[in-house]
Amino acid sequence: MVEKDALLSQYSEACHSVADKYIERSTRFGAADLAVLKASPHNHCFDIKIQHSLEVISDVKNYQGIVKHGESDFSTADWALYQDQVEKQAQSELGRKETLADLVAKVKSQSYAAISGRTHIRTHPRRLFHVYTCGGCHGSGKITCHNCGGSGAVNCSGCGGGGRVNCSCCHGSGRVSEQHQVRDYTGHYRSETRYRSCHHCSGGRVTCSGCGGTGRNTCRTCGGSGLVTCGTCAGHGYLTRVTSTDTYTVPKFSGHYPSGTPDYVHAALCKAGFSKLGQYGVIELDNVNMLHEQARTDFKYRSTMLFCELSLEIGGHQSSWVMYGSPPQIYDAGGILEALLKDDFTRLEMLGAGWSHMSPWFHRLAHRVITPFMASEVHQEIVNADYQGFGAGEIMDKVNRSLSEVYIERSLSQLRQSIQIAARWSSLKWILGIAIFSVPLILASIIFLQRSETHTLLVTQEHLPLFPWMSGSEFPWLIAIISIPISFTGWFLAKWTSKRWIRRAGGKQLVDWASRKGLLMGKWTAVAAIVLTATVSSTFFDKWPLWSIRPTIPSVQVNQFMQQV
Image (cartoon, rainbow, N blue to C red; front, side):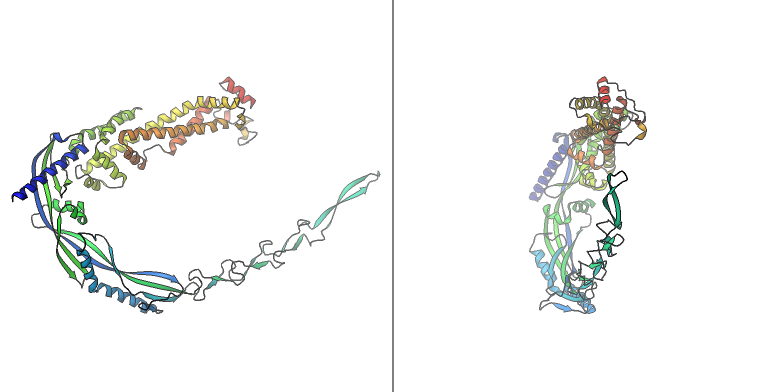
């Protein structure tokens, strides 16, 4: 009895240590702030039943041609007989007593739950063969050629099936020209063109040399036979269906508890997983029951596992915890983190309220709020779980019921809203900044091109007449071309800065989560930057709107450059 009390006391201290580490890891509180008001460790005994049901599957494979079967195999061309043999062999496997005996021996020789999923037991030594006629070629091994339709000949590609082509001498006109020297009345000679009928053709057409005038050529696909090898049976004319019978075991776990067992025992075991309970408690095989009529074997295990109910106080908040197993695992943290992290959550909710989201410097305030919020490991776990696609209820179990579903849903919603507001302001400021700073950059680029004599990149209406109503004015293609790389460079810099801000606020996992939710700068930000940059630059250089382009430009040097071009 003394030994049992000492064991429970040690387990209580271990649970206290786990609670300390969990609080330190998940909040800004330390172990000194945690006080254990009451600890009730105790053993719970229960039964675990693993039901192994046999499942027989007839695996079918088709082979081309006639496959030779072994001495122990069965082969027939009768489809009804083949199906009957498949059914009988599957039923015989379900009723085979040796299979269950082998299963029992295999389970006993291994540790608890070594077979925790669908597992192959054996393959029947006899295979079933069924030879049948190929439906594609009906046993001949040949099918109609798809290229010639079975005729063995195709239209000549040279004449298109007509048998005649244009004459190469007269090019189909039927006459050729000849130059003659004639003398006019003044006695001078001059060259005169005369036409005559072509001697090589009749009416400009000659017999096609490719088909000899028949208009048809032998089909190269089938060699003129009109038939090709059947692809289904590879020319054998027959197929062989081979069936092998495999037996599997499908285990099913269930817990059985004495009267008066608290409900949290079953819930904790389900969270841990019945197949993994050997890591946390003592499990011993108690009974094996083979049910041959149902092709099933039931294994009954006796299990003993430590549980502890803790009453804790931290930061003026009390909560009741439930721990299980050795080493101790937290099942229910009593919602303690929701109370301890209330201030961080409240600041996050207030971030999007009022008029703060109307400030262009919203990202500074958001950084001061999101950084301490994401410093908590439990909040990082929430973001990771949501990134992986888990629901609020599943996330609540993952964080040991230290937070409620409402808290999780509202935290994710407010976090998404705050990052979205900051991203929108960032996009707007970067777009305006890129458009403004593009003007001096474009001006410097044009001056550089003028000095390096590469200004011929400017496309005028003479070179590319896309706008006939522009009356000879130059279209500012050079400005547009320079605007694109400047805008893209600014957009990439803006995207990198936005990711860097989110990374500094909440780490890489928050960046990945924001990217999955579509909160980062996208392609439309780049499009807006390009359009606004081109518009502002064209306006500055007096090239906007396009239909009212005037030759004057504010910059004297650039005006002279444009006039030279």
